[in-house]
Image (tube, rainbow, N blue to C red):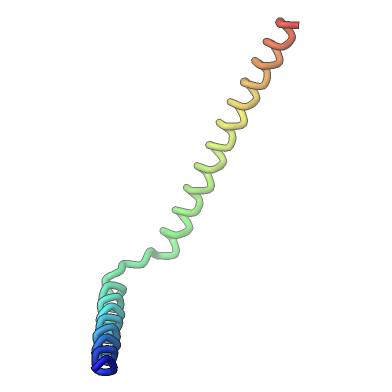
Length: 76
């Protein structure tokens, strides 16, 4: 009895896994992959944004550092 129950469980699990792979394959066929030009453009935009954010963070850190130095020099 237990052997039949385990066999049924494995069969159901196998069917669920097979169904998952079939559905995944079907969904991947619907994907619209970007062109080479779009990939290059998106990469350049991402790099530009990272540089801009880096400069803003550096500027904020520089100003905050100078303010702390000023407060320390005033406070003695």
